[in-house]
Length: 270
Length: 230
Image 1: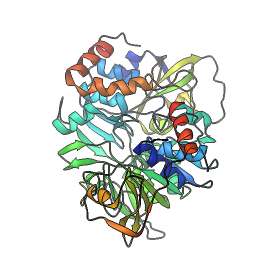
Image 2 (image 1 turned 45 degrees about the vertical axis):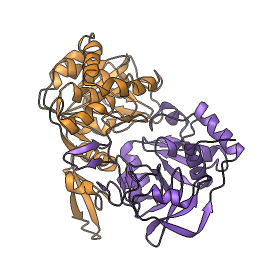
Image 3 (image 1 turned 90 degrees about the horizontal axis):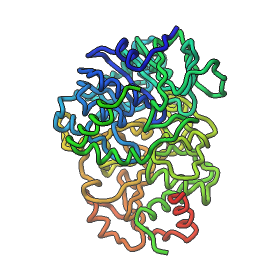
Image 4 (image 1 turned 135 degrees about the vertical axis):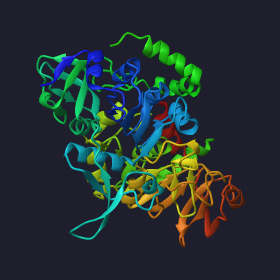
């Protein structure tokens, strides 16, 4: 059964320096508050895994928490570049960042393989592109038809962190709207933390919602607003203005560092 | 009515979608074009966004592929693994839009790096859904502003293959594959073939039956601007 914890305690008990950590949420329900807690706790040498690094990994990378990034699309959606990610790859600031790059389909397949406790996932992809030569992928032959397919190694993060709308007091989690790879990352990870908008006495089943039972989750923390500036369907909208503003804030190292100090390091943990 | 180059691009791309198109939409101009088609001649056009929203009907243009309104108005919202494996790899999606930083004469695209992969001059966002979209849909539409920096002889990196690229709509005209390479088949009003050649980094072939694009109609522009304003 999942333990109900504070965000600070949840992150402290589950994440160690050097861990492979995946914060997921495909545009929706991005666990920003948990990302900020990783920065406040001064985590170092993390391998960060995430399909769409988004602002949250731009912040973690710029704050010096990561030594490696596993990803499939590293931009500011609808706006442009992630400047801290670029600065790390192009200039090694604040430190060198190793990248393992995939396609969305490859990464989704790798998470699903991890959740299924398989060593690899299989798809039609990668070959004929230059990505195949620069990432962890292998060509395999279908034993039944002889078709050449791509094998991607399963993603098995040490810690998976997602944000959801609701949990009950035994840690059962329900999320709805765009569900991304949240279920897959929780089930693929050795340990998991779910932050939620609210704890309710009883979850009301919703058609089409994703349900993750409390016995498949390690810790649940109540963090209202924990996905801002992304959004939580039914609670608050995406702060598109902030996504646009981030372009300027993140362009300059000093301005970025000031922003992190003011809004993350000196902020009270949620 | 006067109009911008971007509006011409969106209108011309939209015209090529039909009422039975099932279309994988990226953000920006593709999303504008697909939504315009749905608002004008192709109300039945199905918009699929990689965030998992199938049959989205947004009233205003989303900033990201995962804006809340896409989920609220969708026929169904599926997980990302389901989207890529059942729907895209499963061959259910007929048309996909792609953009890129570079394109070559075969429609191969680069959205990964400018310069060397290990020590890039510019690190771009990367492929995202593009490699498998390019491989899995029947028809790939590319929307890209045309310049010698973008339309290059040789890509710095091949992010996706051009085998299924059928149409490239630019701010100057339309390119389509003829005899195995992208050929200028249409110029937009105000542009001419020499100008498009000058904006292309390879020796661009020009079709004998080169046509001039119909300028956007008042109805098209009104619908387009209503979408952008909403």
